[in-house]
Length: 365
Ligand SMILES: [Fe+2]
Ligand SMILES: [Fe+2]
Image (cartoon, rainbow, N blue to C red; front, side, top):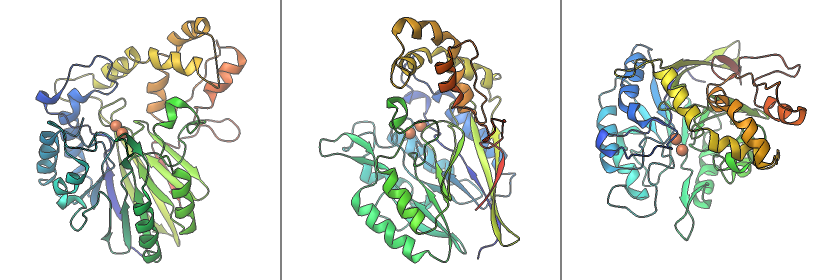
């Protein structure tokens, strides 16, 4: 048993001090606003009577030491505890580089934010009486040094032990990569697969076996809540890309059931970016075409380049609509098979009616 509690989630903050921002015109996310956006979200969250704040990875733009240092120092001034995990941007390579930290140095920056006792990049803590947070590290490297999104064997063995010891508690898992698909056929699509955990099926089986029902992820930069069997994965979009969301979650016992109330806030503006939401949506639209051409020409659509070029302009705001969550996607001007494919991205119930399931909703566990 636990007492009702509330916490905030800010994902994919991609903190970038101005001197660390590289000119990259194709970059999808707007790291230029990372610091003012974080300040604005934190200012609001300070009024929300939170028990803690969760940051599910991509804390920094590219693992820069100065950005990790800045963030760790900023978190020290917060009125509530903070728990972090790494994302793929937080240590881009297996070795330390001139700019970026090495994987094994990550816990040292975040000793006060979950890593008190851990020499690994993962940890577990009873963060409130009866509430066990399991904070996983999905960032691993193959023998050639290539970064993967995967849980290694050592971590899976450790996890099994933690799950066995946490049987009488409410267990919450946080991991940067997606474990449950957040859009149609994400696992099989080359554009979606890189956001999935390579061994998602192994983790899901393990969590199902131990009746764990809550996962908090990031990485995809999309507001989406997905379900597999009894497991709910709440993926929070990035604070530095449209629609600049963050969440407040309240978990309560109601009539012997555990209810998870999810509330979403979106930044409309920050200092010097008065039309942030609109500017950011256009920014994403300006950079979408290349991806939309791939989406149209790759399986399962397999359209010709000529057709793809014709349809791509209609998809200018497609990804920003998906990223905002609760999207209704329909392109009546497309041929039936193409129209049907895009409709799969809609938030609808079995009858095809619009439902609010991604931003503001209540889940009964
Ligand atoms: Fe990210
Ligand atoms: Fe990521």
